[in-house]
Figure 1 (tube, helix red, strand yellow):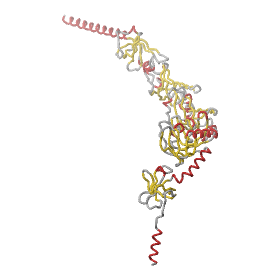
Figure 2: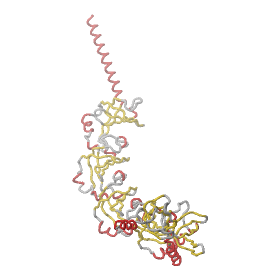
Figure 3: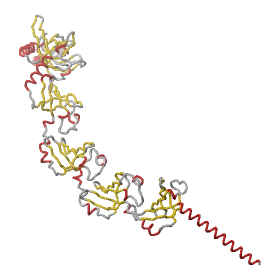
Figure 4: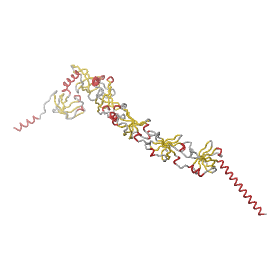
Length: 543
């Protein structure tokens, strides 16, 4: 008897409670389908909440969520249909009505596009109409799927329900007015990076307010690019530097939230200090050096080289090179620093007397050729000049005959003027004077062989073999026509000392030919006389 009573009591305790249509129940999400949610509300069968009866988009729900629901159609063997909207409708309607009276925003979501606008639901429950002219949706952009804020511009209750009209445009205009009324230059705002352009960054401060950060306001370093600083979607703070309510324009600055590096420039970069920087750019007038982000200085062309050097700056430095420079000028008002490359390297003319005493033979590189002679670089910043008269022991009509830019030459230091930074060199004096041997071994009447070097109207210039000097054959002493490279036999007509070249040698081809002819004539006469004498002896012998 006791056992039977116990079993009946146990069975009664597991009976499914009875439900009725319209009843409010709690339901736990146990599954998601394309058309809605599957819920367990404690009934004999599972429940189903269609998507149109949900307060939020379907993707916002997850398994395990507990919802307050109202039974719409109760079925024991099939799914029971429930609604999340209906139990929330009255409460939500009161909130929407209050929002209309107080002109506060409510959340709306587009359900469908209809003629003249959009059908929306407010707070996931209350149906409303959003006219296209009040939507503020941009053309060629998709209608937002997520919820957005609107203002209720018309609310009236009718027998069949409520007539609610909303405006997104009115809310945007209200927010814009409120923003410009509450903000001033110097305020700091937060926003999300919406777009990155070459000219700057577009910042979304709110759904209705955008600000712009010009490239010049990104950093104190003018070379900074927008893409170097932020990425789309980043949340950042910026300072308002200009407001234009009439144009809904907000100009912002990132760099003004950073310490200005120029505030301590006089302390960090006093005149005379040697500092290290990176070559930023090169121009005909000089090159710019970055000392630190936002701080750069100019090295004028005149502060690159010591002496009268005519190099291109690209031969000395390239963008990206790390260089040492000396601060020689500060203009804090205009934020300008003048630097010297040559002073940081040291003046090569200091101690030049010890390094390059007069009489020493040195090696240098030809840097420039002019009609008057050569410029020769002995070291960076130190050049000497070789006058045309000191290029060779022979006559030189043009320096280009002997040298070209880039040639290495040996030269003797013949004069040093430190005060005026002038160094005079001699190429010819760095080698033995060939005229000494000429004067020792040749005299008037000496016979030499020469090779034609140059043809002049007044005669020909020849290089005298075995002596490495040039001689001149006047046109009146030239026989026939010659080509450069022809070998000719000559007689020395005159041999003079010459202060500029060391000597002067006047030669004659005609004299050599006349002497040769005379010699041949003498030899012939002598031969004939010898033969005649020999004949006379023979005749005497016969007698």
